[in-house]
Image (cartoon, rainbow, N blue to C red; front, side, top):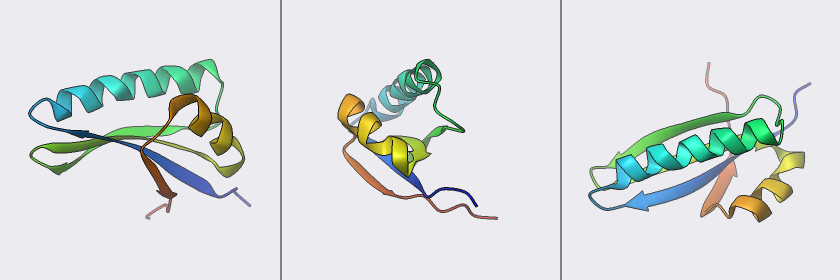
Length: 82
């Protein structure tokens, strides 16, 4: 049985939103590697022309430490789609 996972989200707005979100994702990947998080998932998504998000998916039991260290703007339950 796999543990429940959460998607921690950082929002970026404006003309440089895509570039900023992509750069932020680099730091999320770096953090996950340094903390040896199990099976982290990170990516950038386009919400609109001027709104992009960067996200990091972590196991629920790791979320409080990651949240406190990285201060995401919001989070949601992560659901795997097949």
